[in-house]
Structure formats: C-alpha cells, structure tokens
Length: 79
Length: 266
Image 1 (cartoon, rainbow over the protein chains, first blue to last red):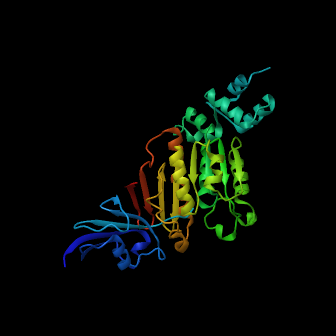
Image 2: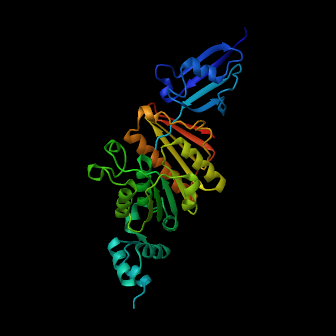
Image 3: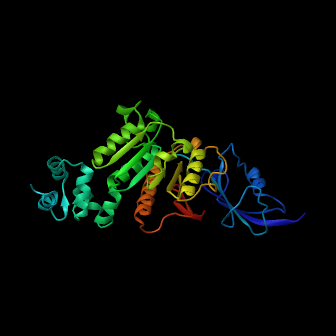
C-alpha cells in the first residue's frame, strides 16, 4: 500500500481537542473528506467553511497528493 | 436678503460651522439640513461634527459621502454598529432592512439595544438613534425579512450594500446578485472569536452549503461584533471614496483568540 505525506492545518474551533498543525502519513487516494471524517469534522458538528489545499480553494472530494497542505476553516455566518 | 453663501461665510469659524448655524440657515432659507450641509461643503465649509474626520476625510470626500447611499441588510449585531459608523462619518442616505424586534438576548452585542426598547422593531430604533447622531442623514426603513429576488430592486441604486445578515444562504444569494449587477458588496460574518470579511466577492468559497455556521454553538460576543463592523465600515468608506485597497478578490479571516489575521485569495 502506497503512502504519502501531508500537512493538516486547522483553524478556529477545529483546533479544540485536535491540533493546530500536524504532519500525517496517509494512504494514497485519500480525499479531503476522508481526513475530515477521521478528524470528526462534519456538517452537523462545526460545519466547514473554507477548504484549501496549498492555498488554493478545493472541494471535499479533492484527492490529496504527496506534500500537500490541507487547511480547514469552520463556517462563520453570524451577523 | 443675505444669501446662504454670505450667511455661512460669516458664521463659519476656521472652515467649520456648528449645527446651531445649520438650523438657523435651514429656517432662514427654508432648506433641509442636508441641503445646507451640501451647499456649505461646496463652499469648502465643513459641519463642525466632522472636524475630527479631517484630514482622513477631505472636504470633497465629505461631500461625496453626504451624496452617497448605503444599504444595510440586517440591523442586529453588525448592522447596528456599521450604521453608527456610517452615520458618524457622514454617509448621506441609508436603507435599513430587518424583520426582527429587540429581545433580551440581543443586549450582549447589538448597538442601540437596551431594556427600554425590548419588543420594538430594530429598524425603527436604529433609525431614530442614527438620526440623533446625524440630522442630515436620510433613512429609509424596511421592517421585513430581506428577499434577494423581491427586494433587490429597492437597493439597486445604492452605492454600497452591507451584508449584516445572519443566514449564509441569503448572504450567498446577495453576494451573487451584487456580483452580477456590479455593486459594491461588503461581506462580514462572525462566530465566537472569529470573523471573516470580503468585498465585492461572491461567497461560494465560504458557503458551500446553506447550513448556519459555528455561531449557532459558540455565539457572538460584543468585541467580535464591533471589530467586524468596524472593518466592514472601513471597507465601505474606502470603496465609495476609492481610497487605499479593499478586500476585492480576497478573504480576510480573523481569529481574535489567537490574534491570527489571514488574508486568502478568493
């Protein structure tokens, strides 16, 4: 099974009981959504705002590549 | 009979004139407050209440603001504070939308809310208070929920539109319409210690789904609201006057808990 190395950066409430930044070894073919599921980040618990890979906006189905930095920001919508 | 020009030139002191002088001119020449102030600014005479705006806001810019029209969609946390900032700096016309009344749980953050106004329409209270701050201000109020499709025509002539809504679904829809119609759209949103801002951008990258954000669980403390409203006000004034740089094609994400200020490309 091929593995790749990625960096995960979490922001705001996502850091609570998780981390700010972490390097992880993951299976090749893993999507951003798979990582969110592992971290317990879902629409019901602190919905997702911005998802970026290497400072570019991507969708949850993005397949992570070797060396990618995934950044997740929770949705903020109050007024 | 003495002309308004002569009257103002005689009464001005170091380029400024008081509201008392304005009221006398209104009566003497049968003019509105806005008409007197506009005429005075054309002569290079500034209402005294703007004395501390200069030289950040020049006399010509002050006139441009007096002629400007801004819509504030939502008069809760962000809207009430943006409204005060715009009234104080000298925006001439405001259009306020909010369907809601003040409730006790608004008092932690919403401008002009207090125990005496609980149960009253937000747009009515905010409008009355803004009028006391700036008597030249023209305000139109709409005590209704803003519907982008039905109500956009009411704000289409505005120079800038402030997103002070609390619903990502309407925020997104409003941003898309503003983009399409090439209107200045000033986005702000808050949740806990966090805020986000964008100017003249559509919000698809921020709101991929229509659900509400973290604010439903973490709430909205006063300082995040006033911080976010101040930034929106600055973006609005800069965009109207063409000053400096605004957040076009950018997203500013703020985390006041850890003092992070991150600007992303939109």
